[in-house]
Length: 113
Length: 113
Image (cartoon, rainbow over all chains, first blue to last red; front, side, top):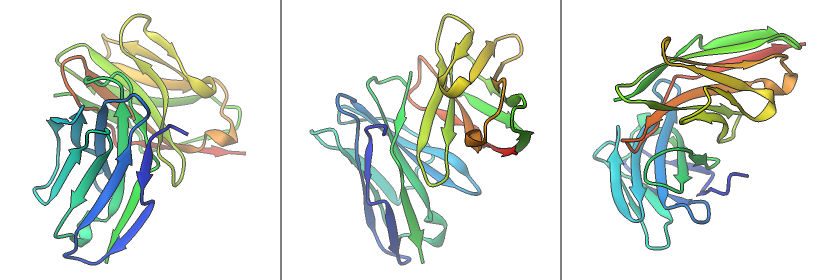
């Protein structure tokens, strides 16, 4: 158990809909990272937050957004969903701004139908 | 920006044989290097990491990796494969001056009895 909690574990939704994925980092970790894992793209870095502030952006679509709350949990919002957004979404956390180690959650499997 | 290339999307070994998974990196600054393992339907678990110091890094489950700057490599080895080692392995790179971790495409390890 990495200590990173993601909910829900599975999500099935229709095209055009909006969903919210939730992540609780390990106790004491200030950084949260979001990754998307798909068969064709592999593991893609989406975005990082550190202590409530956005720190780095990767290949995140404009339809996607994230935030980190004062209690350090984070949410990834995916809107106007398309079939191609079906993937595993992972959250990871670390105790620093720079990545010297990251602990991953179990992921949320999103299926868009 | 950093990147990693994992040579071989699939590697198959017999139980008890040497495991060698190859990873080459690209980085304009001294890298931080990681190996993660992913079992089916699970998140990523850190096997080992190199940030600074000793170039031979020992990790969990008998795995080790050697950072070779001259070859820009960070290959993962284990002297004797066990059936429980069957999983997907990811090499990743980061650095002191950035906030994200970039992953390779992954290598699926199969262990034959």
